[in-house]
Length: 408
Ligand code: CAP
Ligand code: MG
Image 1 (spheres, rainbow, N blue to C red):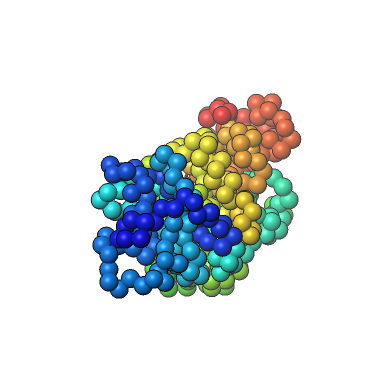
Image 2 (cartoon, rainbow, N blue to C red):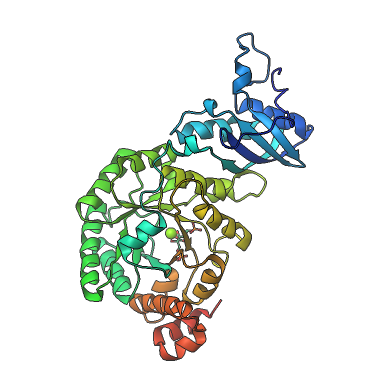
């Protein structure tokens, strides 16, 4: 092994039970085998030139490229390279310098598989799908949520009132939008206190459990104190923008173990996840979020306003639920959705999903409460296998929604 060479050995069988295995897409002007060796070297123990300080022992810590199939490479990383329980360090290795190397023109981290010992060094989801269903007392139908719109600008009383309308209309979960935190026009503490008051009022009137996801995104100590405020005010969820908060911050929040359901908003993920030939795939973000311990995560819709196609969203859903020694987490479908989308979403992704609509509820011709009712009616029709247009004949709010946006 010299400088960047000698990190490719397809004869060495990987040990998936013991080590971390990463799968990359790679493009380079130099031969792929050489570029792959550079990636494995730079992301484990190597650098561009031989160093006299190299010890023989380094051999055991060196990453190994064990498979090259056209532009797809698989690299085995000895687990000892990593600090257990430390996501930032993991990513500084296998999602760090290698993305900026001159010779490596395109690189995408497609998937990572973790051995049990690494998975067990994280808290993982506290609730997961079954735990969230227990809290909300919703046995098997999809959960329905809304995002208060307009995303910014309402004052805290208006915010709470819109939330109340959505809850009494039939929505289970109300969330803050990704860029609403603690602005002058809607201070965090006033919003949370007032909106939780409205939530408890709606629960009494509907005899249904309701949920509110306040957005605590901010400098991490402030985020922690906001989470504590939600807990002290009998909240049941918190929502965090995971990309702008950063992986270290997410671990801090989870490790505090507030006993609140954690909802992961992924605003900004597309900066590095959207280009199919460069960056980090959404499945990797799903796995990292599960390791850290989120209970719910936005994963796309395939039918709404965001860019992912059906194949991509199905893969994201698969990684929310695959058996990796952690609780399964709720895939959240959101973005450009309305009541007419629900049958297709359930057909594609099953009942264990959270379906959220912002404009698709608050844009209903008869307002928020009717929009919420239309969403619930669409879920009810889907659960009874009744075509929406049929069900709409006897459910006016759904009928008005279909007239406005149609059935997908
Ligand atoms: C949806 C939303 C969500 C997006 C995020 C928005 O509002 O509140 O942030 O769903 O996208 O601000 O766009 P609408 P993703 O229902 O009015 O579209 O879930 O793909 O991360
Ligand atoms: Mg939003």
